[in-house]
Amino acid sequence: MARIDVRKTYKLYIGGAFPRSESGHSYEVTDSKGKFVANASLASRKDVRDAVVAARKAFGSWSSRTAYNRGQILYRIAEVMEDRRPQFEEAVRQSEGVSAAVARGQVDAAVDRLVWYAGWADKLAQVIGNANPVAGPYFNHTAPEPTGVVGVLAPQSSSLLGLVSTVAPVIVTGNVAVVVSSYERPLPAVTFSEVLATSDVPGGVVNILTGDAVTLGPWLAAHMDVNAIDLCGVAGDPELATSLEVAAADNLKRVRRAPDAEPDWAEEPGLSPMTAFVEQKTVWHPIGV
Image 1 (cartoon, rainbow, N blue to C red):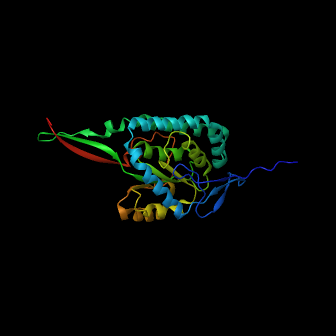
Image 2 (cartoon, rainbow, N blue to C red; image 1 turned 135 degrees about the vertical axis):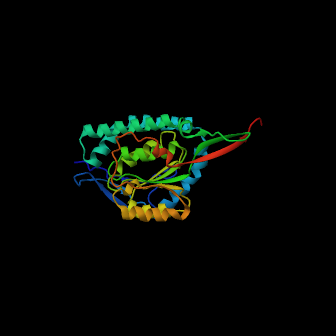
Image 3 (cartoon, rainbow, N blue to C red; image 1 turned 180 degrees about the vertical axis):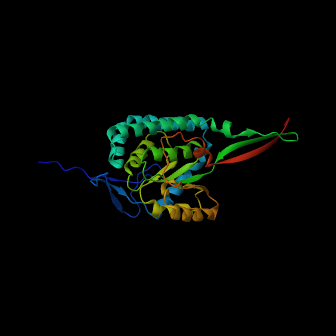
């Protein structure tokens, strides 16, 4: 008797758990040739709210950890990704329609990107902070602080390297993230959520929703408990990007604007993805006290 493959329906990742979408809806995920691969949960407005609540709950303990410890945890994510390399390569190959060699290169770059950000964890404050010269008997120091809950509309084309390149700078700086994955290519994000669940990342620090950025983006941009948003996932759609910027203005969110086209994620990202979501706080302290 011929065996029938098990048809998978992947769930969301919220607060360290894998719930179904509140709506109960899912959608078919196909490979680059249109062949059915799996079902993915179709996140709803209620799922966005639940993810923001989970992220806010996690923010206090995550932001108060030492930068060194956050770097250790990012490095652990890279280690677990390395262990699950075959699954990631298959997901990238199916999603992006690339060769096995190219998929292997994408996974290499994604793991390396995590290690790169892990290395910056305890160095960023020394680079962008400062001891300011002031006239008076005071020390004056400026140091970066995390912004809070950051919404991330993940890239639509680069399903793994682009995803990692937008999530890692958010959490390494002490923020927490609510991520909307690529709509047509969600499988690497699903596998990434399974890695997060088993790699020392506290529940709620990263929450991953599968669904359409066109639908979920406005709710995330308008949510009053989201402090910043990365609009990379709507690159090439200036009308939608502008409407999300307008919605984000209601509570003065920090906005990382959508580029005209999805960037080359293989290039070294520099510091701007990290500095986009930190605030500079200045402290005065009397000399001799």
